[in-house]
Amino acid sequence: MRLIKRAVHLDFHTLPNIPDFGANFDAKQFARTL
Image 1: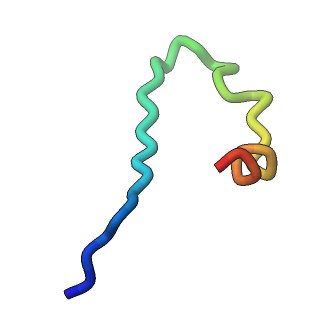
Image 2 (image 1 turned 180 degrees about the vertical axis):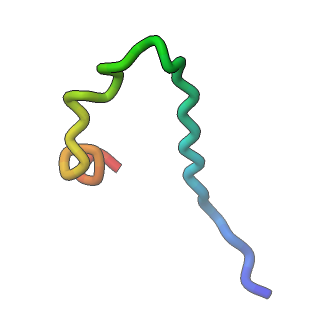
């Protein structure tokens, strides 16, 4: 078995009464940042 040295865990919990949360999310920018 190979040992994992790094892991990224992304977990978002948002309320339904915030309808525009993440409206300006840029997946390509997020990937570049990672």
